[in-house]
Image (cartoon, rainbow, N blue to C red):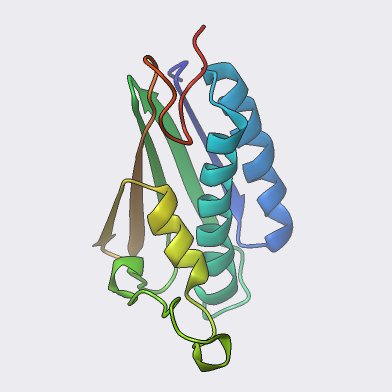
Length: 153
């Protein structure tokens, strides 16, 4: 396994989300990612995985969700694969955040934050597999400008 990458899988149980947090925290520390960056990545992945676990399957059978996170230079790439039903989050319209609270539709804020925290989102459906690829730029030098400036080491 590459020193700048991790991969793990979890079952379609909400209790398995602790696997995500544990692995992401260790990866962030090894790569020198600032806590705010790790928070944003964890938030996005937790939202994605919660939606897969809660809505992705038509049965009560165990299913495996695979996650790979890799840092190549200043680009963090996250890939999530699952065998759930088709769902392309890029097709979900943005929520109405500028209207009064009582006029807003329920839901959609998680996807709003995923889009805000990630620089690129690509969805593919291959055979019966959803493949979601997220990219995030991590600055490694120069003055701090964004939330994900990596610590120099």
